[in-house]
Length: 354
Image (cartoon, rainbow, N blue to C red; front, side, top):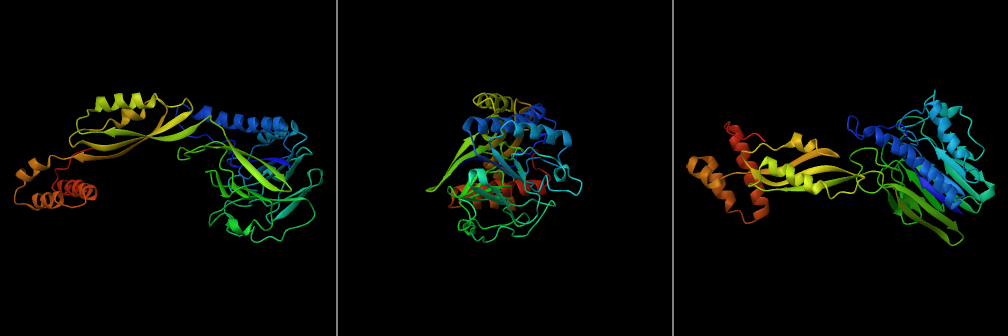
């Protein structure tokens, strides 16, 4: 039995609001979802598992019609889905009354409920969120049922406030446990308990690859593989800063480094190293460069310690510098030296703006 496992699609989200690429990112997420449906048709998948948060918020009726049309286009694939904590079953949710195609099975119950799929000899167990938070351990230890060949758990959660669970408690009752909620994809137990991760990154802090899983269940067990979608990937790019660099040079170096990216990558630009203590970092200019979502300053000021010792001879500041310069651990001593000098200069009203 061949299946596809996705979660946290978050249709309707507008990532990085206000950025030039924001609208395109929202459309790309819809396109990636439709691409998965096309992949299900191409792979002749028997089952599509959607482990919660198909939508970023309460879905509109027209959006459900769009999704249903896509589901109807793959009638040979059984589709089982649940509501997560973002698209939970609000009392007025259109989920509650929407008429899905015959191949779609939406588990509305808030307690673990089976869906028997006789055609593919599979039972899928799952439940939906009825509120933004639900700290019940709804999955727990499950006694394996013998009413079908394959037993699958479809879940959403994994933290203290959203259906907490322990992965090692799930393997006895199920052949495969398909989870959503955490946006970073991971095999919690290889080929048995899988957190799908979000189909696409929905926030600029969703680093790393995103995509979907394809698996196959046989009498011998389960095997799954991850398939990345590369419409967007957030990355951290470090910009090495030295005391000799001007603001103009930093911008030029950043442009060179950013040019090395793949077209789908969006950067957190991280400034790291030691800067001239008097320089003003070109943060605004760097933030305006192409596909830069955030600029992070992790630099330290490079103080002229010999000059400071002469200028403040006989003071606590000079004594502090002399003591820390002799610190045996060069790395931690240097960091303490910079932090301490900065604090003392600030206290004396002579700290430099950064």
